[in-house]
Image (cartoon, rainbow over all chains, first blue to last red; front, side):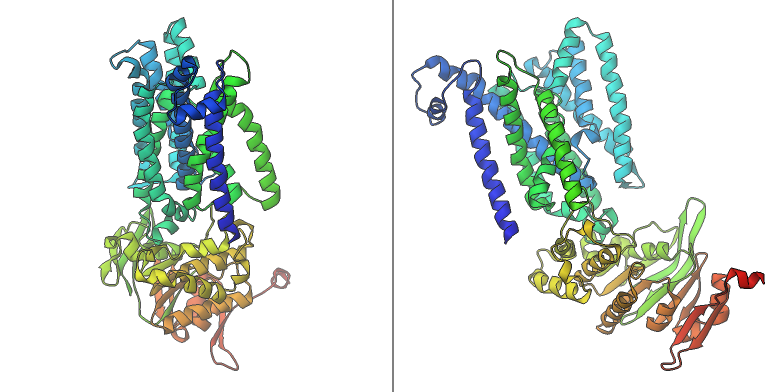
Amino acid sequence: MRARTKVVTLFAVLLVALVVVSVVSAGAGQYGVPVSDVLRALTGQPLSDPYAEGALWAVRFPRVVMSLLVGAVLGVCGALMQGSFGNPLAEPGVVGVSSGAAVGACLSIVFGWTFLGAFTTPGAAFVAGLITTSAVYALSRSGGRTGTVSMILTGVAVNAVAMAAVALLMFVGDQAAREQIIFWQLGSVAGARWSYVWVIAPLVLVAALVSLAVARRLDLLALGDRQARHLGVDVERLRLVVVCVVAIGVSAAVSYAGIISFVGLVVPHLIRMVVGPGHRVLVPASLLGGAVLLAAADLLARTVVSYADLPIGMVTALVGGPFFFWLLRRTRTREGGWA
Amino acid sequence: MITAENVSVRLGNALLVDDVSVQLRTGEVLVLVGPNGAGKSTLLSALAGDVPLANGRVLLDETPVGEWRAVEAARRRAVLTQHNPVSFPFHTRAVVEMGRAPWRGMPEEDDDEAVITAVMADTGVDHLADRAYPTLSGGEQARVALARVLAQRTPVLMLDEPTAALDVRHQELVLKLAHRHARAGGGVLVVLHDLGLAAAHADRVAVLDKGRLVAVGPPAEVCTAELLSAVYRHPVEVFPHPRTGVPVVLPVRSREEEECS
């Protein structure tokens, strides 16, 4: 029963944090809007300051929603990857999603593609992310099966090639393109618009729903592929589903927000430290946790230095890295193992 | 329950299992013995449908093992592998509960709690229920893994060296559980290293050597000094236990200095 109380508390805390961070984040920034006005705007009441109302609906709200969506999908995909590989160090980048998407984004930037208008760079990143992930999956299969280790190593090789391609494109591109590539890679949810949000949201929703559906079977993969198969899990199909979800979800997230490392790695760890490794709780909690973490990181990125919008990927890594390390040390000394 | 017909397994150029035909019958404990590298674990993997066969076929309840859906097969036979690491710090009870996974959505799901409690008591791990699996000792982990396999409640059990990490008391306990399972109408295939255990607890013993099945039958017929000495390339003595008459198998033990003198 104590475990159940923990789970309920965790979800309550995450939901409250989600609301608080979102509201504060919507109000904060160069043009400050009081929390009471944010709440009025959310409930559809007119504000006395029309400029504030415009700023909230046109800039702040889509940005907050975008950070929630991107964070949620990164968190949940991190949990899926760690679960399906039975490896606490796996994260979506392992299967080449991020580096592949980077290649796509760089191509569109360097060659000035515009065939999809404002959606060209995200579109190219999305497609390239999918292609790269499929390549990793296809290359790592042998004899109809996909070994965990062979998949991770294939990912390393494919990542290396992708990063070489990015380097080449930066070399080929002009000054402006280089600058754009660097900022894309640093990651940001600045400039999010409703039109982007409507494209991302359904993809994130699909990824979230499928993740919740497979969560229970992921527990069995912790025993190893062979043991999971003997317990009736179609390991190959499950892993294919997971890879597809991760490819679609993370490609979508990365295509708009650039490379935001670390969220997918750290969120499931934090959740596991609180409520243990069961995926039925871990997957939905990672979804919420990722959303909260990225929204908070975005808030920090916009407010810590006035008149500067820091790259969000830098913020997550800079703040989260040492924190993560401290947590790992603590768990290792207490429980004698990775948590 | 399980029938292997002319099964061969090849890995690269090595023939690991060479034309083995053997049957696991209802109500018996069949023990597989043989020296290191004889192909015991590979044969068990082949019978479990884990490795592709170079030749022959394996039937699980009259149907080729590869034609069963994974979950259907998991309701008929449970497999305990030699090593059972768990990637994340699941609690012991949660690990045992994973054994109930094949029955999800079936009427048998209602028995989950009762089965889990029973198998944990049977394997003597009930006091470890709230411990994280990675913090257990090797022998404790082995018993939890066995509890997980028993929780599947399948007619066929395939156990690969279930006693390797266990103390004397728990070795006997495991084989007693195997016996009970067989007497209740199941079939148990066990790979063992300890010839004494094999001779004492098997209904039939199958001896493998270099991938070939060299003998199969009741321990009294198969466990002979000549056969075992030849297979293990070490002199082995067999004599009836003075009280029970069960064959006792002992390697001839000599110290190096005595041989030198």
